[in-house]
Image 1 (tube, rainbow, N blue to C red):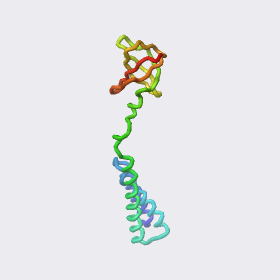
Image 2: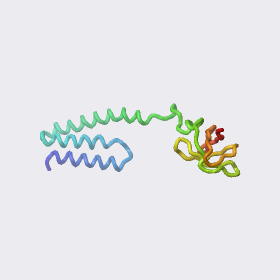
Image 3: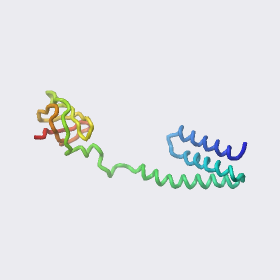
Image 4: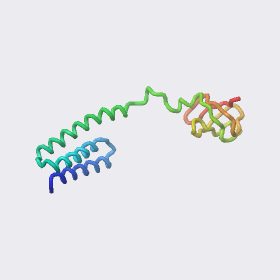
Length: 141
């Protein structure tokens, strides 16, 4: 088997491992295998290609860790999307029932809503509070 084929097969194996596992670890070794396979077409020195594979894998892995750590930062300091609904205007999609529960559309999303006001289909509303997945609204006059 020519050396470039070995590196190509190794790259494919690492990519299959990446697909099977829920990590972002083996991808860089697979990519390094493909890069080394291309290099091995022109240079047939096993020590050089092996060293290239190790160096490229290490560099890609180190730089990707910094990028992925930025993606995995917790969202504690950010406003939760649902809290941004308070104060937003919307429209009633259905008449509210006798328990003052109905369906509203706010920011292009449909929500279950409760209100102390009598709200009918088509009435404009404003969100005054949110509890779990239920919005508390009042009718806009």
